[in-house]
Image (cartoon, rainbow over all chains, first blue to last red; front, side, top):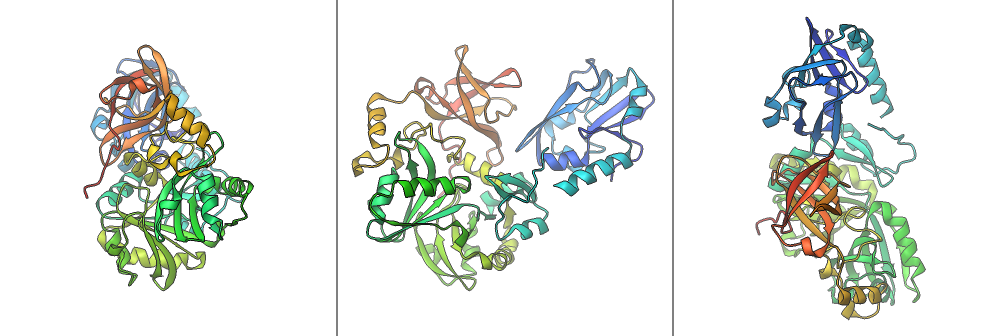
Length: 130
Length: 369
C-alpha cells in the first residue's frame, strides 16, 4: 500500500527523494479521511519553506486540511493539473496527485521521517482505535 | 482527525450494517452515525438523479395523546396545527418564551387525539422536557425515540423503489401527507416528507425489522441506481435546497422571522410560547435575516467564517459548502436586512483573505416538478 521508497509524516504527507529534490503528496490514509477532494491550493514556485510550514490547503466537500512541508527548501514545481482535477488526490494520491517538488536545503531531515513500515503501523493503530 | 471512543455513543439498529458497508462513522449529536459510504459527491448525485437510502433512526419521536393533545402542540409550536387534517404533516418550530427555537420539527396529525412529532436527535431529551414542563392541560406525552427506526428513501426514483415493497398506492399520498401501511411485511408510518429537496418518503417502524427493511430496500433500489447515503450528503442536499439545520441556521437565539421561516409562524392562531415576542419583533422589524450567497471564485466558505461588507463585519457563515449538484460554492449567513437584496456584493474571510461573493435568491436548488 505505502511505497517503500517514500518517507512519511505524522500529518500524513509523503516525500519521495530523488537527488536533491523531494516530491511531496498526501497519503492514501489522508485522502480517505478527507473524502471527496474538491479544491487544492498550492504555494508559488520559488517560495522558500521550512519543515513544518503550511505548504498548501486541500479541501474536501466536508473538511479543510492544511498540508505541512516535511522538509526545508525551495519550491521548484507545483502540480497545476490538480487545479482542474482535484479528484486525482482521491484516485491516485501516491503518484499522479503529487503536490509540490522542493529542492532540499537539508537532506538530513529525511532520516527523521517514518519509513513505510513505521507509517503503516502508525495508521493501523489509528484505524484500530476508530 | 479525532476518533472519539464509541462506547458511550448511541447506536441505531443499523449500526452493524453501516460498519459492514465500511461507512465512515462520526459522533453526531451523541449518536454513532455514518457520514459517508461511497463518497459525499456520489451519494449527493445519486439522490438528485436516482435515489438515496438514509438511516435517520437517530431522529427523535415524541408522541402527544389525549383530549388536550392539540392544545399542547399549539402551545409549544409556532405553526398552526389546528389546520392539519388527519394524515397531514407540517414543518414547525418548538418555541421558547422568547420566540426562539428550542428545535425544529415535523408535526404529524394521526388523529384528533394523537400527534406524532419528529425532532432532532441531539435535542430529543431537552425537547421532551420542554414540552413536559409546559404541559399545563394534562395531555399525555411519550418520549418515543427508542420505539422507532426511521429510513428516508429520497430522489426521483424513490416512489418506484418503495412501491415495490408495499401495496399502499404511494402516488396517492400527497406531499407532506402520510398513511399507515405494510412495507416489506412491517407496519409503517409512511410519510411523503424529506430533507433533501427531492421527492421521497420517510418511513417509521419498530427497530427489530431494520436490517431486513434496509437490505430489501437496497435489493429493490440498487438496480435503479439507489445507494446508501450518509449524513454528509444529507447536509449538502439540505443546504442546496436551503433548508435550515438546527445548531447552524436556527437555535435558541434565532426567531422564525430572522430565519426566513415566517411561513411556519402563525401569531393569528392564538396564544403560544413566544407569541408576544414574535409579534413585537414583527412590528419592529428584524435586525438580521438569513441570506444565501454564492462564492464568486473557487474558495469554499465554511461554518463560522466572517462575512464582510463596506469594510466591516456584518455576520458569520452558518453553513457553507461546495454544492455538488449545482457545482458552485454556496453559503447561508445572517446579515443585516439592508444587505439581503439579490446581487449585493459581500466578501467572506477565508484563511485571512477576503473572498468575493454575492447574495442570490433561495432556495439555491429547486427540483423540477
